[in-house]
Length: 349
Image 1 (cartoon, rainbow, N blue to C red):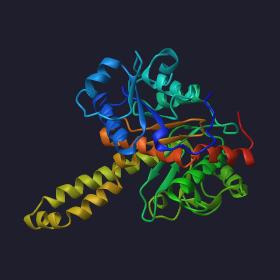
Image 2 (cartoon, helix red, strand yellow):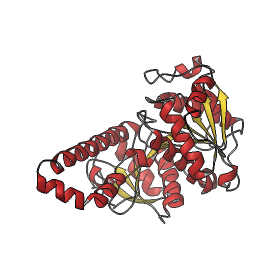
Image 3 (cartoon, one colour):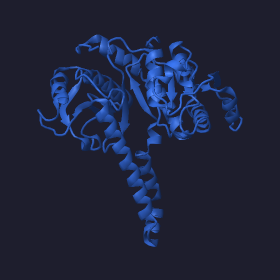
Image 4 (cartoon, one colour):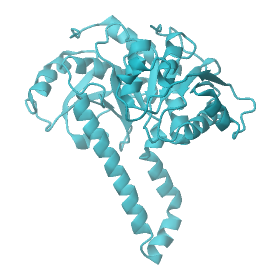
């Protein structure tokens, strides 16, 4: 297992392993995004995958002065393959990338292929932070006031209520570290705000979250609160979180498509669109998944960023940014200290 770092690293000393073969547009967009990240953020990128395919893409880029290295991996886990493929394909690019973190050759792994495979490779090779029962996926969503972290967004379809306390702690540390949100407000995603609402799972989780003094729990929260700025962290089981996430992505795509159509409908609309172009571009950027970079798999001794399977170069570049920011802000160290200092949650096997 990898060891949790004990000090904040500088960008120039960071090495981030990128699964160059993962995702719908690999290796072309993955390599391109890695090159962009190496240039913009000054980090070393370890491109993991089939050397010939990776080098062919690097030859199309200006890589002079950049810290790029190729790590050979002979196999690939396809987007349609289950997590079990990780055990069978020992030399798959996502497995080798996670192994690089385990061996200390990299501090983070970025993977845009199968989410299940990325999770399995990271958990099996990197290992959990002591005291963390289950790793969880956290995704930052756009909000009126600030970002809101949705956790768990798909790692654990079935949860024990006690796990939500761990999710809340890890999410709070992240939002406080990355977005400087003091005493991040934590809400339990539910069908109503009143205490006592919901199914048996959330009813059991509510008193546990209320009793955990390590978090700023504000009670139940509804789906609309993910975007209105009233909370900074929304905790839930992975099934609920994934449904909420995919619904939000669908609404954002629908809104962008509808807006584009309406702005082209009449000459007056086109004129207005031209005048408002800078504002519209900025607004579109705020809800673009490519800008978020990827989801963090919380609870591991090394960092794993899981990008959308359809990520293009900009998405990969921003995934590296997410990893860099988390490492430079000691997120792993702070989570480990939080869990160790007060293990108030009784782990459930």
